[in-house]
Image (tube, rainbow, N blue to C red):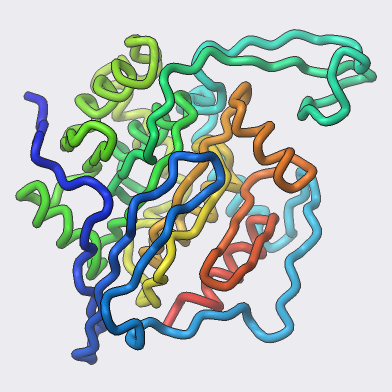
Length: 334
């Protein structure tokens, strides 16, 4: 049975008043309508009294690292390896955009201002056939180590949709109660589409809704195998041993962060785990192979590499997963 709730609230909506353990301090945030324009966030307003917001700033002496392609910091080797174990179990589902195609062409066939990967003096020309683009980001309430949530994240990556994620780690004080308030039960994932007013539980129903509305109506093979899909999603996360499941006390930011990433990347996975544990709302711009979002990021910063983070609360813009994780913990963990 589809868990469709037509009366779903649309943006702007009221986030729950967060509380900290051992404190009666409360604050309320209103995330105003989010722009559907790539790489843009609409206005985000605080409640009448902005004073409860924590002061957020980069760590003293902080300098964003230079991007290093395919580099792994030695202390992160085990983390990257364990996150990469998902690839054989899920056969890279989410790595390629809908209707992906690729061809090898000579370098002069690709304009100098266009992103393309080079191989032995040739360029990969990658394209996709994406469905309609929603005006506003899809809103998803979920957490990292849930196999049902991963199914939904994979289809969102394949469809190359912008998503406003509200992390719901266990014991999280903010967004788990909000899901109960909106839908009547704490079950994940939970989707709200502010473009249509539709909200629903159940990963399979969410996937069917998304491919019908923003795809070609076809559920990808690796997401159509029923119990086998769910089992392989679970096996894919064994190496991470529950990372991205439990709440770490944190400061709730007035603005959502922005992340360019895609689901199968082990580098992106490590950053997402920390965003979930710290319960930090973030807009994720999906960048599977063949997605035009890759070109948008290339035009924005001059290279393509993910994960790439923009924090509008501090003005920080940065690459490199290990350093992003350290930054997030330094700024937001309490």
